[in-house]
Each structure stands twice: as structure tokens, then as C-alpha cells.
Length: 80
Image (cartoon, rainbow, N blue to C red; front, side, top):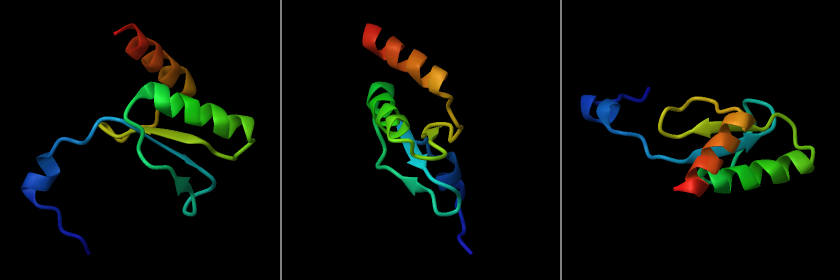
């Protein structure tokens, strides 16, 4: 059993995105991408390759991000 200390629980998560594909629990995760644009390029390659169950996670919140939301974020990053 892994114990989490109070300092670890409050530590901010790193920004970026993790893209995975396949069925749980054997899903394959890629190394983290720092920007939405980088993650979007990878997702588009996966979708073009017909890989099953492509999942995008925001590292900061650990929430799943939709393809549409990732596209919006990549567009916003491009404007900045």
C-alpha cells in the first residue's frame, strides 16, 4: 500500500497532456506532451491509424479532455 503525505497531496501537478490508447488495464500511455498542440498532433496520428480508445488527459487536473476541447486549447496556445 502506498502512503501519500500531506505535502505530496498538495503538490501542484505538472501542466501538459498524456495521450493513451487501447483498453484498460493494458492501455499504452505516451510520454507527456507539454502543449496542447503537441498532444493534438499525436492524437491525430493515432486516429488516422485507427488505434482503439484514444484518451487524452490533462496532467494538471487528471481529467479527460475531449478532442474538441484539445483543439480549442491548441488554437488558444497558437494565438499567445
